[in-house]
Image 1 (tube, rainbow, N blue to C red):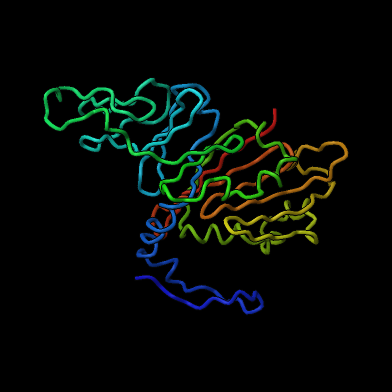
Image 2 (cartoon, rainbow, N blue to C red):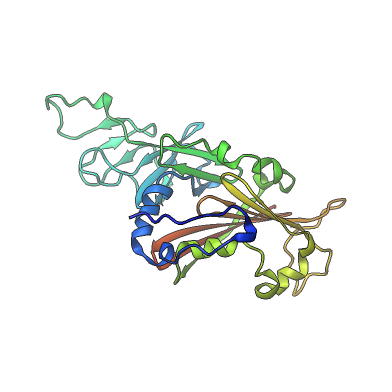
Length: 295
């Protein structure tokens, strides 16, 4: 049952939301149905889908999807055969068709049914009218997103002016470096809540606080995303590590972008991290980190 609680937009009267939204499993099911099933999800890297026939599979909420490169087009489908609901792709790779391993039904990269063994002569069976269920797909820079909701706003509308704001970082020229996954014993919203505030930075991240110009740390809420940003101080790196690649005649900046409901982008000059927060249960969360950098 949905929980209704008062909300005051005046931040000076802010109050903590009810704990039941975090520790009651019923709300995770509602979130999967009403949030994750309708939002854009980060599902792949553009380099994984560079050549025709490249494909990746991914999970969006509880749904399995497959994203394919079909010539110049990126296409997405529910990873479900029209016959007995087996998957038409596993993992990632390159193929010129998608095929269910249960009964061999085979589909083109455009989603149309090409071959259904031993179905000849079956009345009212019209393969030309049968297509895998589509999923919306869009790319931005090195990232590929998918959305299960055919009525959702396009990705460009959700990103709004993010591409313009981060254009000086040249994210489109960054290349994948590595990936790590972590499993945490918390509700997924706890991780998001932590990301959305810089209040903890001086205490929890003293190294980052040393580099950030914390007096000029700003938070900008937008309809579909939140942007936190601050200048970086010209301090010597500690232990040989630095959060950005210095460039002449530029004031280095740190940008932290949260895209509703569960995508984070940490962007510095010369590098970017993506964080995707995946709810496993009401009290367990997987966080997937990927690192990108300029050559």
